[in-house]
Image (cartoon, rainbow, N blue to C red):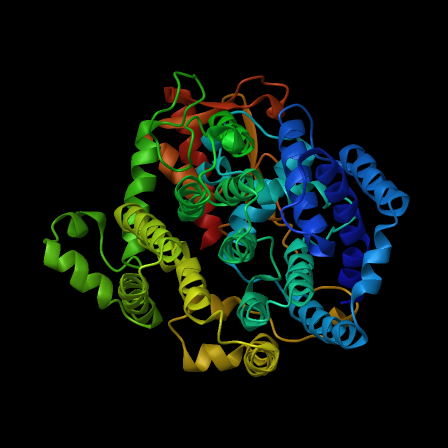
Length: 544
């Protein structure tokens, strides 16, 4: 906790300083401390995304960025903004922040932390953005802008990768500074994302803030659209937000095209980033990509698509069985999955129906546009992979729009206190959720409370790996474990090795002496196949 607190006290002034720089160029979406922090996150993320094409996001990038932010923080006396909070507000901020720091000090437990977040951050800090890295490990082709932001702060500002904890403190500042108390109701649920740099947390928080600003009548089209595209760049399943802000800007604010240029620039950076790492504009959709030589193998993409469809049904059916489903089977089987996921699916559809009726009754353009945008997003998710983690943000949006007028300070603090107690109890004693909701599998990976985390956040170490060589690629594979969060680079997950072998291909270095120059796939020669079979034999026997 103490080390996360020190990181927060260090990072927030840096973000405020950079936010001030951005405000002098493009103005502010909203004022105050939270407005500067929000702007700082955007400008630093875009800056580091651009730099990552050419250089690793190591200490030599982090140090001058931090120094510049701190210089502006003190030069413009931004610390004076802190005095604008009343004593009661300062007390509330302190209490909520203490609980946030405590929640963020637990072990990371989201599986993507080990298979996607940490490996991505390691590549970014050691090599930068690597061309065609999806050929090595398809998951790494995502390279979320949020992980770029986390990477640049991971060398000394936030070595424990708790940027999401810092973000929750920012969200608290926004809620209290703007007196929009309903946001406090969401904080306890978001504690579950505070131990990892999960992109789910920033997109939920940022979308609620942007939505709040639109409902409050914010007319800064340029920044509203730019921030909404930024949220989409963090996680493309948030496509509803830029669609909504576009409709809001054109149909309600009557803005001209020029005011969308900043957001379009952010979108172009996002497309170029994905083409560089994945070969197509939007991961994982293999559509409309340019003719470049580092695109992933079509057969591997096909297997990934089939896996995503099976994940829709929680791996309860094979791909062939799903293909034989009738339309009725598609719906029935999705609604009757075992455990908690079927309840979430039912609640999701019920929320959409409820919100659609609400929008029809209200007959307000703003609410209608929100509803249309959510329906567009939901249809796309249902088409590609209807996993609950892709539409969890819908619950927050629906609740916010339905109840934002009904939660004053007293009610919001009461909800925060009750939910906070429940969530902290679950984090401290994970056996509770493992006992009462056994189908919530992630609960099985939660670590229990340890006294050491009061000083240093809990982390895992697993430095067991084996090294192999196929063609010009020397790579490492985690020993008897499916993820490579603690394996030296270049590392490949065992699952992708099996997929590559099934497809008859294997990743190779573009430059045999430098993994940072990128990866391509090549058809396996007879010699490569023999080497690959040895690798698979060793992995399988080690796993036993």
